[in-house]
Amino acid sequence: MSTALSLMVFTLPLAARPAAQSAAADPTPRFEVASVKPSTGPAGERGQPGGRYTATRTVRFFIADAFFFGTPLETSRVIGGPDWIDSTRYEINAKGEWQPTPDGPPRELFLMIRSLLEERFKLKTHHETRELPTYELVVARADGKLGPGLHKSDVDCDAVFAARRAGVPPPPPRGPMDPPPCRLMGGPTRIIAGGTTMAQLATNLALRVERRVIDRTGLSGRFEFNLAFTPDRMPDGAPPPGVPAIDPDGPGIFTAIQEQLGLKLVPAKAQTDVVVVDSVERPTPD
Image 1 (cartoon, helix red, strand yellow):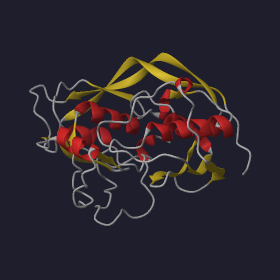
Image 2 (tube, helix red, strand yellow):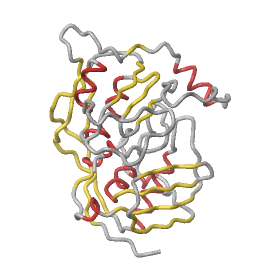
Image 3 (cartoon, rainbow, N blue to C red):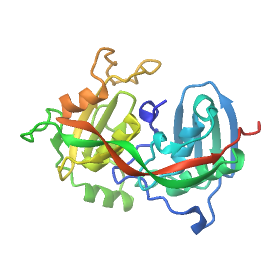
Image 4 (cartoon, one colour):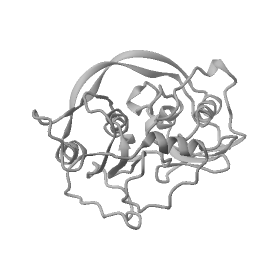
């Protein structure tokens, strides 16, 4: 299943996740306690104050979370492994010494997930560079005109990030459909942004289309938009309060990007960093 339908609940500022570093450079952080068991429940992932982490995912998704190259890693860049790492979901309930930061989840959390996979799933991997199918994000029209849903942002994001780092109290709660200042929020049917660069939009789209997406728009600065689309697989249950119902006959994400933003995804190929699964085992029951 594509991560397009299973993005993290964390609301990440558009500065992106911290760049990954070699686990050998320092002692790898570990959860204090962790429970791992097979699950038939719905997919989901959440980090909570106090260092708690809960998730129900496939093992391939957990591996993609645990390894990243300065940006989130698509599951298509996790190569190899037995069939069950895609077919069986596992529920992880864990607690460790980590706290959310103004720039989103800290590097330590993702390294804790990596340690857990290595210890409980006996995961062994190595890195390679391979030529893989990608997409290039480009302006759709030859005259450069953008779509009706894509607008330049006038928010001073540098000032917003500085205020967060200084511990300035956040602004009052916003509505579920209001764009978050200098952040991008994504769900299974919508991407809402209030100050994102095209490179950051490309990173988010990569998680949905399961290929690396490279920004070739040539558009500088930050933008705001509310991109709505109908996924290949409709999510279970009703949408949250204040969020419009999904139109089952609405446009798919490729069409929505072009119609609403005036951009498009063009197939391409590029040398891409990947994580290769050398070996992995089913975990022993708790």
